[in-house]
Length: 114
Length: 131
Image (cartoon, rainbow over all chains, first blue to last red; front, side):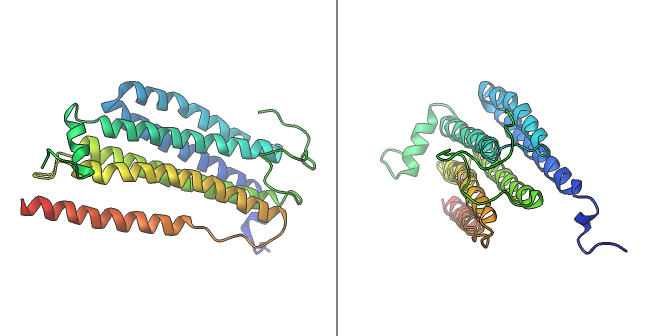
């Protein structure tokens, strides 16, 4: 007879799902890097270089690590994603050359641009 | 990352999510997957913002249109990632203390973001059509 919760069959399934979630996160990270590569090759290269790090962090899923080490691992992901967002925001503001400052003045309702 | 022996964490460690005892590994893993899913959502917001600013052609008559849509999306991506970490900690603390898991504010942030971007898109398109 089967247990009510399928995970009682094999608790390793939860660890496997979590490893896959790490892999998807690393792939999403790489996708951002590829998009950045187009306009800001240096920034895109930095993001792509950080992708294997996220992938590697997924390798600790099923190890017994200290709760503080687990928290630090996730903090690293948040720091990486936030850094990418800041890079992307800078790239977006600087996009379209010298014209972009005039565009920003347009956003803030400043003078001199329709 | 070193793997010290499991047990009560040393007091005063700023990275230890609360007191109590280590919960069932499956709860910890589910909490971790939720955190990762929100970070992928954050990355999707960033890539959407980048795509709008860098890949779309400009809106006729609305030179600020792409920046007005893209830059807030990117900044909200950063906010979602930071909030996801804070909520992961809160949830992990609740699990360690066998307390109810606190409600997440992230769905509300996401709804507000999507609604705001949709409304702003409509405004940009309308202004572009009028000019």
